[in-house]
Image 1 (spheres, each protein chain N blue to C red):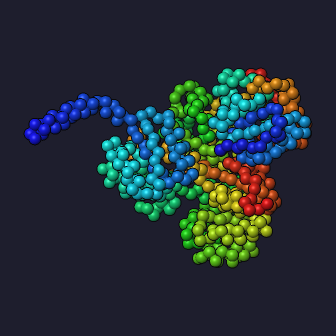
Image 2 (cartoon, rainbow over the protein chains, first blue to last red; image 1 turned 90 degrees about the vertical axis):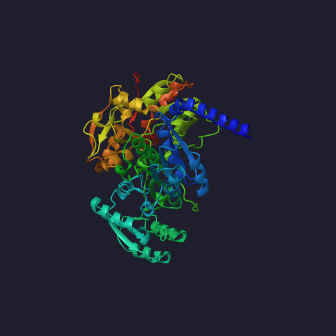
Image 3 (tube, helix red, strand yellow; image 1 turned 90 degrees about the horizontal axis):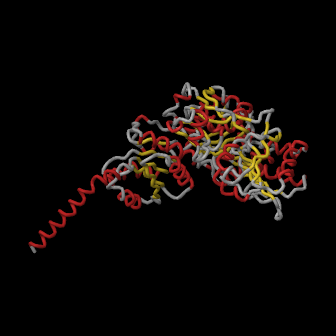
Length: 326
Length: 246
């Protein structure tokens, strides 16, 4: 038994010696820093920025970008993080609210210390209480200023913009009114408390002089039935309808202005580069997203008597069909 | 982004591949309709295929008989594929364009102050920094000292600089002129702080097509018909001319 004990001790000492001899090599390998990209799940909103992020950092020496999907699963997130326990990433780029919360709450537990993180594609990020000493990010909504500027590429005389909103998009509407004042766009807004009030609000707007209608991302207002009603009324009045995603342009909106996932990845790479170069995270403010995905629908344009040929030069894509409409 | 649109006909004999990211805009379906209509009128069986992304363009290049592309792409791939320049496009009598560095209100005073800044532009693939260093920084390495924010269209770079989301933007004079004409308020607060040497405008190139003279004639006669003029307008040019010094 004793000889077995000493044999075990000798074996341990031998491996300790080998490990000690390997230290210089390990130290060399550690010059390579890892940036861990955590995607909340496998969606275009997360995959496209992740790829653009990786491509943007390709030219940087001694950086390896590793993209992992936590699949909306905390256990999965913990398992991924444990793989980095011995060699924690220099920075985490978190895509989506789940990944950002993991970076804030779970990463310090699993990795033994706080890791600076940059987040994107997190709606209402203010509600999560991210520590600004250790994190920063790219906002998830196109600035109103950009939205108005791009809308004017299609509707040059845009001066009065009608919209329907609920308390859920109150902040966005307040911002729109302030920006509108600076840019000469008057907001004609009708507030509703529940989806059933939208039809009456549309009737109200229909009787007012407006140059276009805007549907902000508001789950109370934009239900399937409500969207179809707003769309029909807009077409009947030859009113340009500005929406917030491709699916609504396919369904009959005139144009959509949304964030450009590729550019968000490129922007996040610039922020991470600054952190790797020694910038203090606390000094890096939340950034407005640069660029847009600006889509138009030429069939809708024809329906309301507009021609998109010239404004298409400023768009990313022009669709030529309306889903469900021959 | 990649557009694969139907060929003109099943018996199409020649493929004209088009990559011109700065001027063609987003209405690829409209562009193909106009081009099909024009080539039909000339009674030529030609497949006109625009692509919006350089990677896809390079992938399809070996299949093309003729190519419309910017000279900077020609300089990268011309030798490898034995490509011959045939024509260059012209607008307002100009066969050339420049690249500009635009500074926003809070941007750098000169191109030498760009280090550490965020600069919005459409990347040109892996050669972006090398092209910028050659164009603006006398072959130095300044372009590696700032962060390029890769946008999908020139107007995004201009807007971002105008609204203070980035310190500077890099666009070419073709895009800048278009934005200045149609959205002048976006360039009011921007200042051109550097201008590159002149580049040739996009051109028509041969990949060894069988009847170059005929294709040259078709392109040069574009301005003679209303459909041809519409096609030229979609390219934002006035016509095509022969130019030897590409």
